[in-house]
Length: 346
Image (cartoon, one colour):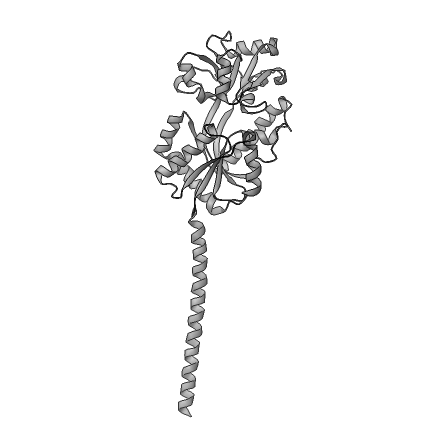
């Protein structure tokens, strides 16, 4: 009897140990599973990444996307394969329609953009229902400014000369740019006009397919003045082919443009920044957002990125996600005012 009772107690004890072991294993397993899932999320990225340039090859967005992926790869800041994909159409509007609806949670597809993400969303013609609020702005990386440019032998020696001629007879001056009416070059062109109290709708604007074609029109005598990116005029200025009347920067630029006055210097309270930045999907995961905020900050500080900026003729301007969002809100106000002055706001 005692022996039977002893065996019973022994069996019960073994059962208790077995159950405890199972519970421990289960608990360890669930902890391990939780840890793995957390680790997997914090190990982002775990697969190849695409950066989209919503334009054809060779444009500003394309060059920016390729420069970013090149330097991130060379510096080892991103270990995963990165590819650039071109998605032209509607000045970025075609891509935005797809991205804002189909890639809303896709942490592995980012894109580069500039003021058109705001312009396309605000203007009446060719309006896009999607804008920067349908994304997660991650960082601004570069800045450029607008330039008002005439031929070297133009009768317009100064911006004041040009504005006086437009005041007297708006249709006597042909203004051109490398983007559609209501787009970036057009807004840069009418900025000093609008700020000088002239009705921008009275000015004749001719659009060309890109800054290169607009410059060819100017040099060929088919336009009196063009608005373009300041970074794109250096070679023409050095060759003595053009005169830059003003830039839309807050202060004078360096290099070959060091003698060009700002609009503010000329008594026109006007500035316009042509920024470029990186965006992610609207519902980006916190892990991916944190990764890109940290990585793009490191990129902005790296010597290889600074070398790339110099090579491309771009100016550095880094804003983190929060600062970038505030800046975009300010830009939205400015662009909205300009589009309203043209009667092109939606």
